[in-house]
Image (cartoon, rainbow, N blue to C red; front, side):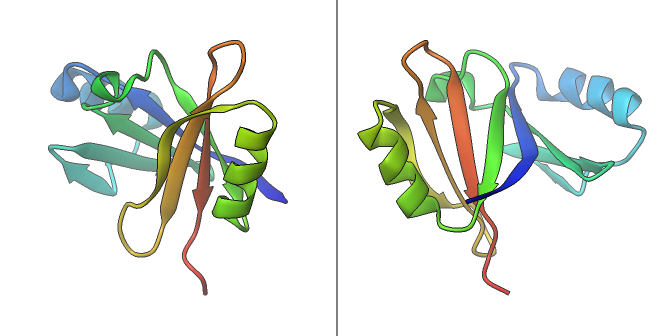
Length: 116
């Protein structure tokens, strides 16, 4: 089951330029500002900038669907023909992410929030 599309991650080559652009677009300061990731929250949407995204194979923005059981959902997607690009990993505080590539080459991300 999914709770919707709540996160989108953009691979960026120049983090400072991307921060300036997304800061101007979103009108908020980042909640996370690290050399490896910059994250914004605006209007219920989490927008991330990943300077290592291209090296991970990201060719454009990756939407992340919030799910209640990431491992089960990921296994179901792989069984349905998706190609695993990044297996489940904890990105801090118990938040889990993973992403796959569908048959058309589109990236689809999954995220699971920490247990409350």
